[in-house]
Image (cartoon, rainbow, N blue to C red; front, side, top):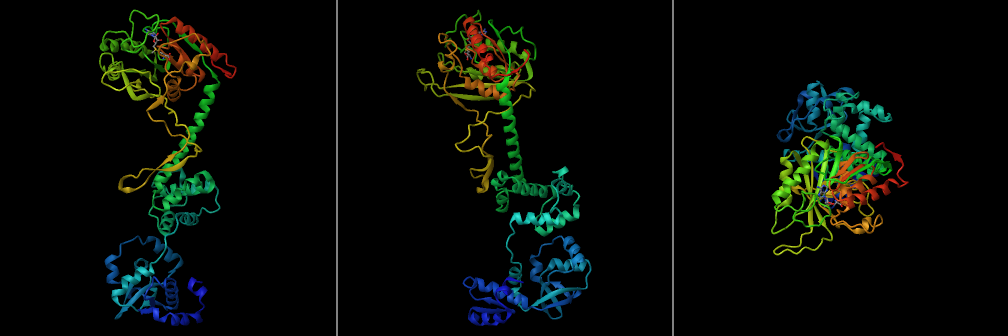
Length: 555
Ligand SMILES: C[S@@+](CC[C@H](N)C(=O)[O-])C[C@H]1O[C@@H](n2cnc3c(N)ncnc32)[C@H](O)[C@@H]1O
């Protein structure tokens, strides 16, 4: 029973019309409100009454034509589906026509007329409207009046039409062809006809792959309240996300969860794996003790250019005390040339290096980068390291420098491990959710999957070394230029796995070696200074004696 009839039994109709008679206007057999905004509800009621009271007549299809005003605006549509259902169940609803001389002209129901002509059918049920030609379009619009179905409701209809209700997940996937998820020609066991009819009735102009994506989102939203929290279907319904985009977000979320699990596993392995270490008190210009291709990750800070620091026991090369920057770079490359054969094909090298400003600005970092390229390295990227508490250096015509650079490179053609270090979680955060970024082109919002798992940027901000970092090992030991452990942590965790071998060719106080060994990597250190090596020996022994490290790895 229709809405109007339910609330207003038939004997009441004339009264309603009588009471509001002055507000209504008879237009072609329809009582339409004079001020339809004011009498909105009443308008709906009267429209229903009129429709219900209309007589349905079977009219010969040969006597029907599209009304010229409608013909002008009507867009050709597929009639296959409607033909199929009209053959199957007959004509469900009458079409609306006007009569002019001996002909009937269709105002609403053109697709059914075309289908009937093609089937062919002899008669179509029609309601004959008594309206002038100048009201045909207006009437067509009113008859077409529908509200948009929410996408969740549409999904429910799709389940029905594709025969998925009550089926197991496996069966549903078979019916929908999930096996070839992205294939637009794959219609699953449901078959092409069923797929297309389902799309037609739900008004979705989708291929099978998009339909699979939509249903996947729909099912996951129902099953997993964390997916439901993303509200992807709401975004689709509001037209703010396409099904493809929403599905991509879902995939990104899955990847973030998988990455998180792997990260936790790696961290656990790192903390519980017992690696080994080797120390060499000699110049790293000679790395002949190492096996070729054995080093997975190397990180070091070469002696600063321009004798900025005073290191003990330097060799004849006195790297860092060269007279010119050219010489400094040339010597620096000798160490890297010796290193190259020792590196695994997919190894990563990170070099913590600062400018010297000796005499003037010497472009040390840029020159170092170019020289690295020349001897066969590929630069992956360069990270500015911003020092939170820089050592005061006074320059004549420039600000106090508070940065160094970390050059990250690999062998040409190498494919390094990469698990980016993640940003610390926002307070109360950690949930993977759809976040809105700034407005994109055309003023449209952009969305991304945020929360746990977002990579840090390349700008690293951390304080310079603090002597407390190793005072418990030997408070009397001093080194002139230790690098903060934080830097080593970021690069070792990002570019290597537990059991990989880490090398620091200028290991100094052993900050890098400490991080590597504490995280289940093997550590090899070279330094020309015996005191530094002695100190490293103590601190690495201490790590290996830690009873928390359980699993032994053969050296
Ligand atoms: C900038 S410091 C490295 C500090 C180290 N990253 C740390 O965290 O303690 C440079 C180190 O290179 C060492 N060194 C200088 N020339 C060397 C050479 N030819 N072979 C090996 N080490 C050398 C110095 O003794 C000094 O300890």
